[in-house]
Length: 269
Length: 166
Image (cartoon, rainbow over all chains, first blue to last red):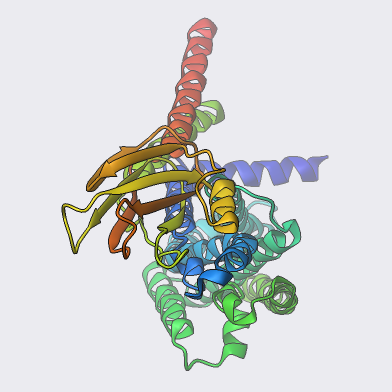
């Protein structure tokens, strides 16, 4: 019971100090803005899928049916591409957030003060990593699912949407865990934020280049696989590819989170 | 700041951002290549709309040439393509004997529509069309207002509670 009380106290501390008004509200507003605006922008562009019509009149009807059979695929594409655009914004947001929460703790002696209380070191880091993952993940997933259903009415494969959401979550976990390790090692807010932004923004630029090895791309940001959806032309194939990458990214992300907890345990505060 | 007040402000901020999104001018031009039917007699697009849209049609080669314009549901567009005739369809809007068309269409819900033009003289089809989605997106704006309303109600209830406590 007292353990639960302590956990609640730590959670309240995070919300009152690090995520005080309007920091949390602004993060949610930015994520909602990018998710909804991007998915609306993509959803109403049917031009791309209509381009596949051949010009023979006798095939027009059958081809139109084929095109609208692919509406489901288009909805998944919108979901994935919007999630990818959100990750581009997160390449700035997550490094700033983690550097502000973790590296500032070393720089301003907050950890030093907090460790005078009987709080385990891993709990100090627990909420600093879990809160951004949960807030960004839940907000983006809910905003994207609602907007895609609003803009492209129809019945989609829930399992494919679930897979794409998982891909997004895996990428956030990887981002947050890498940033936590950087912040624990550098222990300075500004350098940590700059290094993090450099790494994630540089990676997102590199990943978008066609010559970059696709194997590495799919493990760093599995959502990029969605951009190749039309090459696959088959949701099942996409699903199996995405699932493999997601599992690997999840394992790498969680391992790095564990490593960051270990790093804090041995770090000099 | 208490949690109830923060929840109220959160709804208020999300509402603001949704209203801002409904007005943002992203490059939402919905174009499609022509649907070639009956030796270029029918000419049209199928497009998805998130709300209101601006429909434009004219003949670039001959500005005085007259044509008929039909706005159809997706099912009716399928029927038109299947039967190669507009006879058994029930157009949402139809205009006859026009040489230029430009109108904002606001009364239909989000969905997929077909727009088809037929030249009155039955000759080669040289009509050009464009469909542009208009702002604000009504559904997004409405959701934004609802979110802001919830935020205002939560903050007001909190303030009334605080006054009673005092």
